[in-house]
Length: 505
Image (cartoon, rainbow, N blue to C red):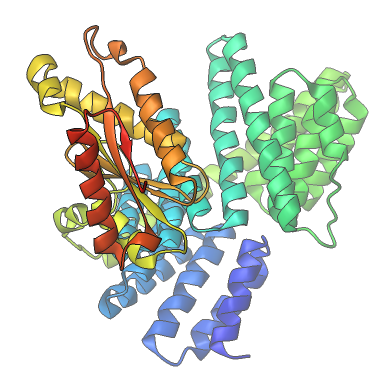
């Protein structure tokens, strides 16, 4: 099997959740790689497989080796994907500061490479770090941006999986609310989590992605249980049967554990004990076995079998000490590898300047817009949008108020966009939207939304309108001509009295 075939098959195995298979293929690809580019790709795949099989120190060393090669090759996409993997490994190793640094560097490199796939992976990595830190607002922001990037890139299964991750953020918020005694908020967050996870499971099922369907179904059931709907959660679990002959062990044990938790919540202790016991028997490592022992101790105590509860409790503590010792050693190994192999690439300012995202609004910036226009698609239209009398907003109400207007306008444009549309901040108070169809009607809907928005929330005397110029790709010879035509129509809208749309008559 050629190195190229090994890499392709290995990536498919990794995506499907067959991590051990991906690792074997990646190791073979490393051995057979005929040039540095192939070797860097093989090492990146191997680092990802090692991450998913809990070989953190080895994964970090492998990923760092790949990172050096990508940097020497000048391949920003490869470097970005590798840094995202390193970030995910560092999260599991407990080094959150370094994990966030790697994820943000990965995002900057992805933007510099103008690669949507690498951008999605990097945004996901940043979101995962924030979720691990329980910084839910940031986790939601980055994960939603990752999901939107996947949608723009046509990555259906990745989009569905990211919707599941959004559900996990809501579920974490539910647990946090429950810990502080706010049962109403916990129920509300868990309900939102269930909605997202259900949607994710449906997308995965439609795409024929069993691994993603299984994980989303398990998360859906857990969310329903936290929302106080255990009977419904049980029905969800029973609608998807895992098969140890087909499914990866981590998916099987997650299913058994979740099913057991729901049975325990319903007082069906014998069933819960049977499910936890099977999960413990199949557990791939001490870390998961530890939690299954804790669950068994709890349910045995509730069932009145105090002897068994004590035995499992003792086993849990023995495993806890073992896992803590292993984690301490692993963290030491990770720290040693980072000290030995860290590459200082000090170009943060350069990367930030060339980033494809506007820092104020979170929308794409002009560079990203230009990239999308060059890529192009038939029937594309562009709407150039300018805030009317924006200078007076800054002069009358302060520059802080002006910034808030731009942020809120960015949010309005983001939510107004449909599949196939892309909103960007073009510069200053000027925005642009690439529109996939119905350009004039869409632009007027944006204009009306802006006019109707409650701007008094920013300042009691504030009112905002926009002028819009629309041009279609069929009217222009190329991207520059398209933008120039839309811009000329924008100024025609301003000359015509503002708060209006000018398009092809």
